[in-house]
Image (tube, rainbow, N blue to C red; front, top):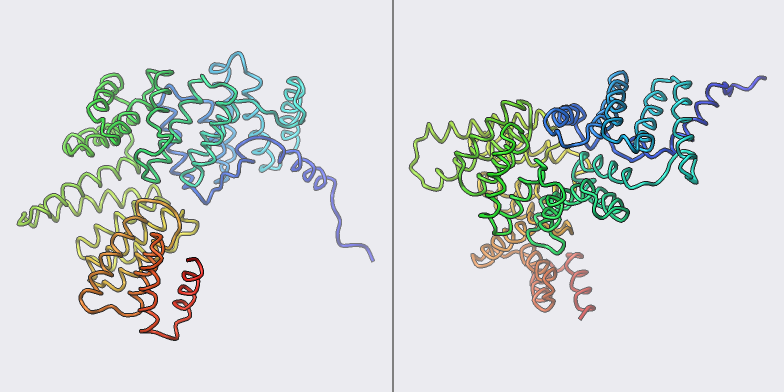
Length: 485
């Protein structure tokens, strides 16, 4: 009987080509996952940057755009983007044309592979192989050079928070080769700033402040760096110096939305919400679908709402209008940036302010259902949901559970600190009010344990055990604590 397993020559050829493709250094082999982005949103963002950020490499953005388009099976559009990258590389890197084309050719090979155009795949693999050989590379299909590390760093940065640490590593490797390179310094400084901004580290060692200063000194007219440095100066209590950079950036680049958006953020943090909104509306005219801009506008209206709420006895219609504006803009954000966790939480919070609790609950549950949340995102979710339970649903027991879940995630962050702070207040209130059951004493013991206060922790767990002697968790915690003394 003939075997059913018949492998055609084309299948063998495709398999061998795949082995060669996997050796390439390009977007397709850098593990940039579709599930971590919204491809349509990132595609639109890259197209905006090509138009507005004239100092940024168009070769880079067209290359990454081609990859993002390929993730959505827009292979013909991806080929057009790679053609534009080919046109730009000759202008942007005339002396390093062939080396800088390696990334383009590698991406071409992968796109054609996805289209089953194997002859074209071989053509571009041959281009890569020839160039690698000419430059003495040990590998036929990839070579190490600093600009490639830089390109990888920017691509990782565009794919979101999950990739920031890897982006920092890539820029650091590029800087090892060329410490004075303006582009490498810019990428490194922006990545460190993003990491600090995400983890809410205000003045940690290795602060981005000095990196941003250095990068801007190497590229004094960079429209992106200038407002970021201003924001960092504001964060580190140097707002007066920061505002000088903001004013200079607005004077030099009044029509660039990235300058307008960060200037708006600066003025919102300064307390000048009116000025912030003026700048944001100008930017939104240029980028009507920008999720970032809608989020910033929503935050401005929320600031105005909370100020009026604090003052009390404000006109109900005015308060209601501010809530509706917040909701409108936060809804715009999640429509365009479907994986932006913090915007969902902001939206849920405003639904709660309007007492639309079903919509608030549904929005929170959408975030709970998201896969692959970072530790900080999970902590922020538990913190926000805990506040919702505490202040809107008036359920302190449910709030305690949420704050505890956030605290248990071992990741140093602002939301974790806030979970701990809120938890301590609620537990102390309950115990002082005579509602100290076994669970609350155990939680207080857990907090003492985290703080390294072992004697106090043992005392609390012993109280918990007396109230619930059969609880194995309390017994185990007590045993471990006593053993560690």
